[in-house]
Image (cartoon, rainbow, N blue to C red; front, side, top):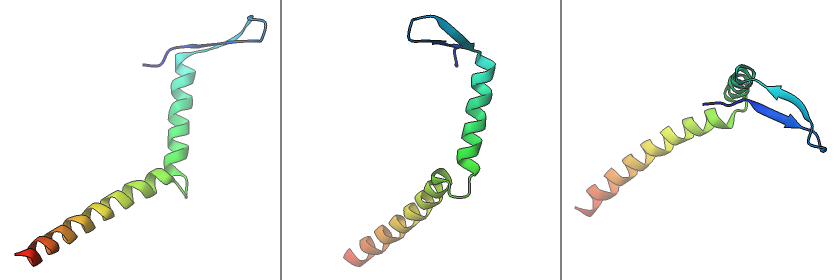
Length: 68
């Protein structure tokens, strides 16, 4: 759950209040920008995890077969 954010100046006076709706929109926009960017580390990480997992399974199967 996202709560509204109150922004204060250095004197402690309230400058602005950021609504939950604005924060949710900002969060969704930032996530989509990060995920859909051409050099996204999130997208690359997911692909690398699938490939690495498949290689490990294959390697383990071969090494267990060679021990028997």
